[in-house]
Length: 322
Image 1 (cartoon, rainbow, N blue to C red):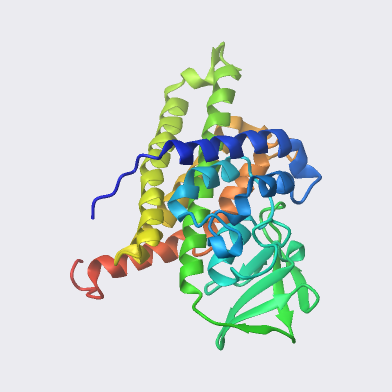
Image 2: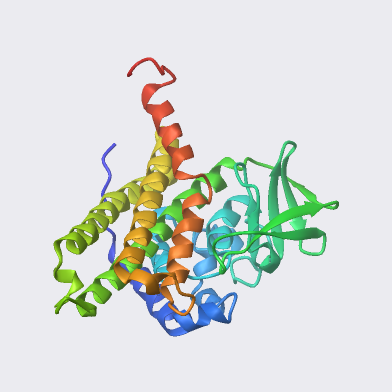
């Protein structure tokens, strides 16, 4: 299958607009005091209705159209259930009133997840159980906070008594959410790399900028290679999901595994480059490091996705290779 990885002017313009909005309304300082900075401004752009069909007041775009913009939400470390509301919800509750306007916030608990992210902000929670999908309102949900590494992406155990049965399968929403999360991881990795390079240029030791040291340069170059290797896999996965191609499951896992590895690698190198201050709460860097860790585990860990790739490549024949 031939795929064109060149983004259109419209896709790049959307990403640039999202970037500008988040720079203005989701600065690092907002991560310390707000749960959903920039949400209203993104809603005013129609961001949360981009994947919804026209009959639900959306634009009916494909996931590939959103990849550059989703990268920007990762670059800004945007809090809130953005992927769940903008990407997963259109496959699960497209008919929910006010979803396109961003007035309704959605969290999800899909197969493979233990806890629902940002469930305390959600008006609706979609829970996948043994008997199918259930729609739970915030009034019916009983939420129990659970420990997590990301202060801007809290996790909750969800219990409920009253719910509404939903039709369909969780598969399409899970694939889209996984690719969207991988796109955010690329954005997180790019920001971590940019901040690390900038710091390496000004931090001096032994009379020279640490960026001039071979060990530092090689580490940063390795991060750049990892990010540039992972990004096309995310683009391919988005196209595969949109086109419902036979290799979509494998492509999704390849994207998530590569993006997760790139982001966690970028986080590790950022800590090393910044030295002792990289561990302090006063430094904004901690938000992006925590986001890299939390998103790399969301919607399937790197190990889980690599196992799926292995199974797909070997086609179940584990004795094919030693």
